[in-house]
Image (cartoon, rainbow, N blue to C red; front, side):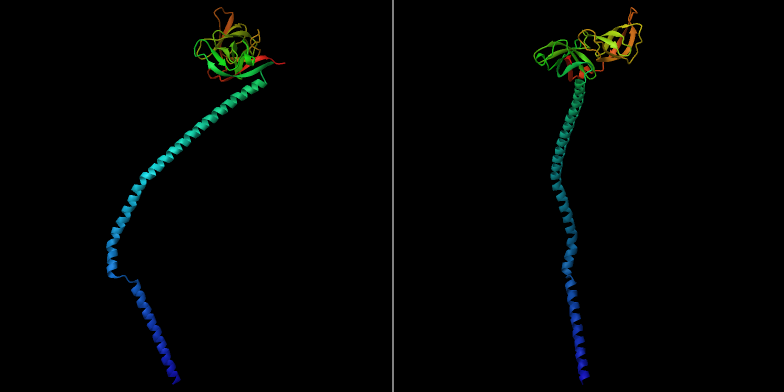
Length: 276
């Protein structure tokens, strides 16, 4: 009897477990299943929703594009201003670099001039606009010790001499002026001559009265001879481009190219006296 009772209990337990599984299965299927009407509505509305989403995205792009263009235009203007500012800054730095190079050359020449004399720096503040007379105006005058006939030079060579002085300015006649004449030497063979200015727009000079019995060739350097009291000896004037005998056959005449760029003079040195 006891065994039969235990068997019945086991049977009922298994039956109960089976019923629970069936209920769970039916419940899960009902939750996962979709009502026919809802499924049909989703099938019908899906294409419409797809079109609505596409239209919405298109409208967003259309409406956002003007704002994007405005922002891009503003950014472009800002970048353009920044580029212009950077270019201006680079040009300013380049100007400083070139000025520093010029001043360094002047400083080297000022501390080690080509001769036993003193120099003072000056800035070119004016220029004769004419083609015949070649003069420049400096920002140093009698108050700074500048006097008439003082030589003016740059690291590349001789520039000219002071011809007029005011309290704070000085006018300089360039050696390219037709009125200018400089006693000179050919550095290689020490042959004397006179370097004159010409009306040549290129600024070339002419050396005359070179003795006929010397060898004159292209590339020879011409310097000041130191004769007279105007120009110290040894300042570079230029290089010989060509030479030929004058009509008398007694002298050579040579065309000289100065190493100085007279059209771009900005700072110069004035020889103010002899060093002690």
